[in-house]
Length: 148
Image (cartoon, rainbow, N blue to C red; front, side, top):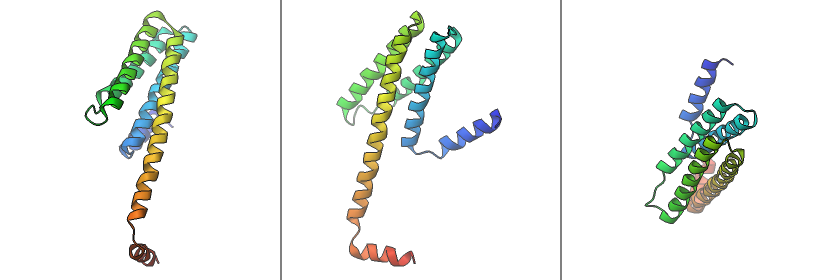
């Protein structure tokens, strides 16, 4: 697949994704870019390190910018502090060529991604249970008879 087709594929994937899917895609991107930065340090490729750090920081900055401090402010404050910590670690890793700081950020991103995936799945199950609980026997029967 050529570069144009790949870009078109990714644009379609993003434009048809739910907000939850986009969040997970962004975490995947931040993890991928942090791993690129790790490779840049390990293989003595400063341009790859800088590129990976820069892209990862941009995604994390976007996460911080979109936090809703009004809803669940304690949760938002904790996430904001974690995002600020990661930004600081990425900056120091870039300045000092420090692979360990990059690995700390990578682990945090992987853990947060996993937590979000679990939260999304739990929310889907709760929503499905709510919809099912709202259905009365009459609506279940009419849904059944309409599907035939």
